[in-house]
Amino acid sequence: MQKKYGKFYADWKDEHGKRKRKACRSAKAAARLTARMRRDVAAKKARRAAPSGRSAHSGRAAKPQSRTEAS
Image (cartoon, rainbow, N blue to C red; front, side):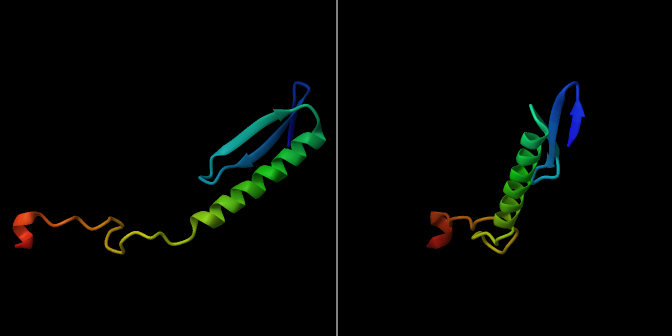
């Protein structure tokens, strides 16, 4: 948390690692916002780590066959 020009800044990093800041009126509000955003980011990262339902081959879905190949 940082105090600058009479405002208190909540400071956190998003799920991609980019730094985010938001101004608050009080130190308590900034601390609450920082804690909430860090919890939210941790939850998003945990959700993102689950395996996807896509094909194991290069991460792309299979192409449909054309009519000439099928016959």
